Image (cartoon, rainbow, N blue to C red; front, side, top):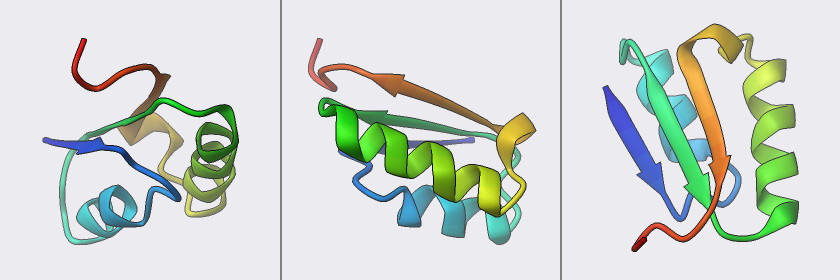
Length: 59
């Protein structure tokens, strides 16, 4: 399992999934990165292995 904090485009978490991580939780505070992560995760077909949440990583 992996937690991609301040995920941005989701590249780190997607790379972890491509290398065998069973599940990745993506977290970012801003709306635009969350939409980008959703698109990228879907494009790579990792929807069932991920959770995408908008929020403050420190709270």
